[in-house]
Amino acid sequence: MTFRLFDAPLREPSQFVGFAGNTIDRQSETRADDSVEQALADAATRLLLMHGGRLYLKLDADNFDPWFAAPESQPFKVALDQGVLLGFSDAGPVLAVPAGIEPEELPETVKAIDYRSVYMQGLIDEAAAGALAQGAALLAWHASHAFCSKCGHRSEMRAGGYRRHCPACGTDHFPRTDPVAIMLTVTADKCLLGRGRHFGPGMYSALAGFIEPGETIEAAVRRETLEEAGIRLGRVVYHASQPWPFPYSLMIGCFGEPLNDDIQADLNELEDCRWFSRDEVRLMLDRTHADGLITPPKGAIAHHLIRAWVDSE
Ligand SMILES: [Zn+2]
Image 1 (tube, rainbow, N blue to C red):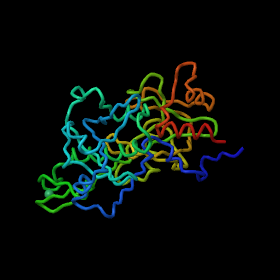
Image 2 (cartoon, helix red, strand yellow):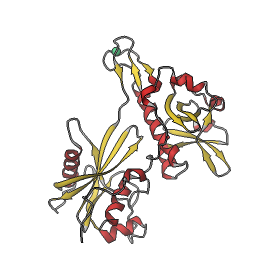
Image 3 (cartoon, helix red, strand yellow):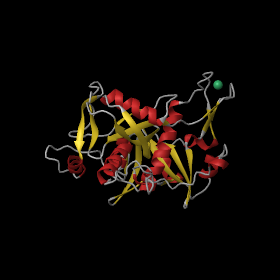
Image 4 (cartoon, protein in one colour):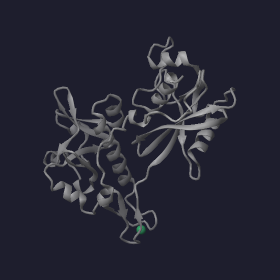
């Protein structure tokens, strides 16, 4: 039997994770400073409205619709001048805009739902979830980067929201994406899963941690696995990535090959960390484990890493 996980994948696994279905044409090379104004002058423009980590959704029968026309958005105290242009769909321009009213002030027909629930419960289609990840990350960056980090002067939004310019010192600032390594340590027979202190009941997942400055993805995977589990890794291969708008990360999923068996879990970070057999993990994926142990839900990249290993030969 050949163990094939470390061969190049035959398909692109990133297509199958949550928040990955963005179909917006970003047209990044043509973003003008007035592109948000131009988009707002187009009656076909559709808006995603966000406030305090929540997306506003119109409730129509049992369907949730995240798309608002500009005139329709007025009652929600939207800050159109702080909107960002995500790009263009087949229907027209797409913006993400900060809204101002609290969930309890909303009419019956509109709900404000936190991003995690929107994605976990599959309330919107994959293309809209991809747009949500893009818009949420950009709005969060603007909200926390209003002032120039070089001279302290208030900076201004430019290029449809893809740049901030400081009028005092002339510095340009660009939206950031924070890379996080998430890794599943595997052999043909077993994989390493940990249980974070904040996890829900029975949940075990892949280990993860921020990639630090000056570090390769592979080095971060090896360092985090050694720090959290006391397991040294040999080969490391990339598997898939996932936009993760909490607030603006990119999860980079990898497999690692262990060089030792004896786990020494960092109990400050983890409540438990142990080896699981393929049969046991299959029960966790199917939600039929006798002790109620489970893996993360389908949209999570950890789920896809675990599933890819279980399904591998
Ligand atoms: Zn400045």
